Image (cartoon, rainbow, N blue to C red; front, side, top):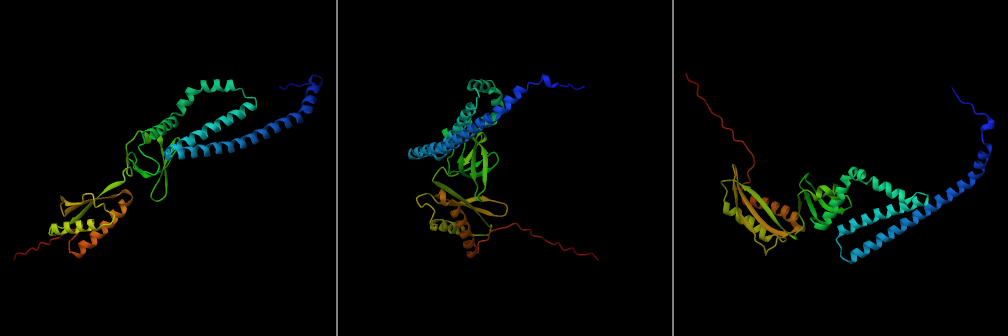
Length: 288
């Protein structure tokens, strides 16, 4: 059942006034939106300028790269929130009402964003305790993620792997798990294990390995170089060796010495055992 409105009950004057005022209101709103956009873009430029000045000041103060990245992200987020809040109030939004709503919803928002807040707190702990810095090579023990620290942000830390992939890890988990920092020290010990056959001359093999370590240009001669019998395994005698090198030269020394030892063992007829199976055939004599 519908309701019919008679023409005498419609306030035609109100409609006429609305139509008359519509162009002026639309123009006023358009001007306010245009001004808001202009102010927004100006604020973006100012925010970039503030961030640039902050980075320059922190760099001159010899601040850690991770601290610079973290503070830059924090300042950027705070300034953008202030700009949005300022523009919203310019359109008639009551600031007191917004603050009251945000305050009343604080608990709910905190519960909903507890993971993000945990990551934020983790980032602060990382910067304060400094278990690693930007440029360090770390191994995260929980999931075996590893790489060079590329960026420490507000919520996440980015690692760059050896094959140039980016691994993003939450700051909260990094701050609450064990990890290995490979590059904290400027020197690192290189450990080797070489297997030789039981019939080979142990002293000869040890002399070859020691000579190669002493001749290695990037091994530190002021540190101990040791060669020893590390293990008597089921099918080999394991010759262990240790030397020290700069952390940046670790892999070059590791791979180079291993290759040189292989060629030297081959030249000296020292066998490097490998898995093999000896098959013996038993002959039976048929009885007549």
